[in-house]
Every structure is written in C-alpha cells, then in structure tokens.
Length: 345
Image 1 (cartoon, rainbow, N blue to C red):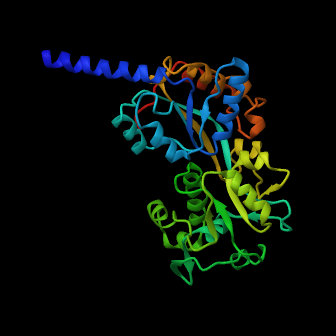
Image 2 (cartoon, one colour; image 1 turned 120 degrees about the vertical axis):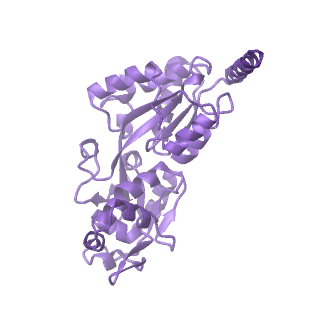
C-alpha cells in the first residue's frame, strides 16, 4: 500500500509540475500541416483582434512533423494543437500515448482539394488524367510490358495531346500530409488506371508497394513545407507544375490557373461533392490536458469552431476552406468544445 501511495503521489507531482510549466507560457502554440497553416493563422489573427489576447504562435511544420511535436508530451515545451491534412495514424497515436498524451480531441474542420496549378503565363490549357499524372511523376512505370524506372522527360511522350514541354513538378516532401494524400489519392488511383496493372490483376497491396514512390531523377522536385515557394517558382517558369492545397491556388488566382484533373476543375463545389478526384478532409488535434492551463486556449478553440470561421460564408471559406454541411458543423462544434476524447487508433 505504501508503494502504491508513493506512485500516486509521484504521478500527482508530475501533473502539477506539468501544469505549472504550462501556465508560464502565455501564448497558445499550434504546429502542423502547411495546408492547415493559413487557416490556423487566420483564426489566430482574428482571435487576437477580437479578444486583445496575445496571438497564438502558428508554425508550419508539416503534418508528420507536427504530430511528432504534438505527441512529444505534456507541458509548456510541447505544442497544444496540431493541424493535419490527413487523419492521425496508429503509430502517431501510439507515440502520443507513450509520452502521456492520452486525452486528444480530433476535429475534422472541412475539406480541401490537392490542386495542380501552372502560371497564368502558360500558353497551354492543362487537363490531365490521374494515370497521366502517375506516368509523369512516379519512380517506376510500365515500359514495353515491364515494370521499370520512369523514362519520360516530356509530357508529350506520355500523351501526344499534352504540351510538348519538359516535365517539371514542384511538390511537398515526405513529411507533409499533402504528400501522403497526393500519393494515396492521385498516384495510387492513377496507377490503378493503367492497363498494365488492370490486366496483371494486381491488388491494392501491390499498388501500395510499387506505386508510392515519387521519382528522384529531376522531373519531380521536393519544394519543402513552404507552399509560397512553389508559387514563386511557378511564376518564374511558365511550364512548371505545382502541387499544393486548394487554398494556395485560391489565394493566388491572379497569377496561377488550375490544372484540370479528369476534366474537372478544383472549386469549392467540386471539392465539396468530391467530383474533383483529389479531395481530402482537413483536421486539427487538441491536447485536452492543456485546456484550462494554457491561457486563452479554450477561447481560441471556441473561435476556431465559430460560425464566423467555419461556415460557408465564414472567413476561412474566403481563404479556400470547403465547409462541412450545417449538421456536421453543429456536431463538430459540440464535440470539440466539450473536449470529446478521440477513440484509440
């Protein structure tokens, strides 16, 4: 019994110490996805303007990097919230649990499209199928009936109706949720459309194993977590293609234009009804142990969940977020504000 009491006292002491450390930090800290970043930044600015409280610190670390930071532990040295352009994985959840982060609220805040775009100075009207995207950017493709390293250097080599320009695409790194989603929604789907795969009877496991690697011989360039850098590079090269979240295309329509995918242009409507084939949900995750401890954290979450932010006419929609239906937004708001704990992954 004495040993049990000692353990309980030690645990309580650790919690009190963590709370005391957290209280010494004056600003909410948000990390995570470069796609969710502009939305969290907008909410942070609105919250500071409305409340007069210090604006939360928002960092663009990528989805994977954000999960590592968020799941690192409890206390002021660890982030309060992380944005994600995909759901938390089972391994990330296990890392959280391992480090004592066991009470987490998951919030699906809306939808986004993975846009491909070019400069408005491009002379070409771009319309790609998912299989053409795969053949241009994958590490390995069918060549003369064999699975081999990608030989294509120009779009016209894939389809003579495509622009006769060199393949050059700027996209996200492996740490990015945008990269994860692009591989799953565009590369895997494009691979599955290939006659080589269909006639070979290859299943989903084969596709995941053989169709997930982006090429590393030059036509695909990892541009880091800064999507604004991709925008700058597209404006400098009319033949280059960029890959990023719809919000960045939306915010740069004065200089960029969309690449249609399977004949569908990304828009709020086509992303919302999933007729645009590379659409995905966006999330943020809240560390509930920090609520009521980090100053203004709950109030910041309330602003994020407000109709002013998340409705179809809200200020996040103005930045490209595709809103949830009314009933789903209501359910989301109730669950998040109550601190509902997500189920184990």
